[in-house]
Length: 169
Image 1: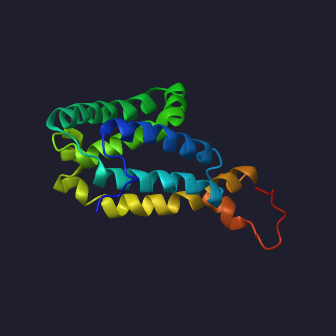
Image 2: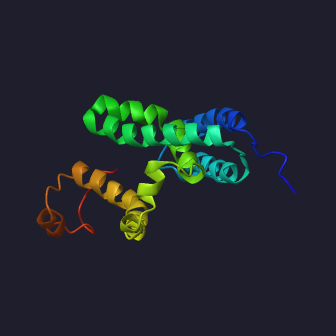
């Protein structure tokens, strides 16, 4: 039985992606608060559901593959070129990344999907997930270290944190 709430066409998917992307973007402004991450989680559920339910004809799939390849190439280049590029990517990322994820899953002719699914990259998957899991504590430690003037490991090891008066983070 088909899910009546699932987007069935590429147009319905795009319309719903605009709404879910906006919700996820507003929620991401408070990136470190657990309750604001729920919006990004909901966007992920929507994308996964859409990957299973949207029906594409051959022409739509070919256009989606071209768009996916272009965005998968442009997004890292824009982010690597300047701080303005990073800010632009932050503003549009829920929609761009959502479309790229959808395209990687659904467009069989996508060169980016073929590249990312090759055997060489499969070996990196556990490490990228581990980096994702550890990135928040590392970022919190960085903020704490900067706030307390810790410039090296030896600085951190020289402080008795049980007795020290550290700046709140």
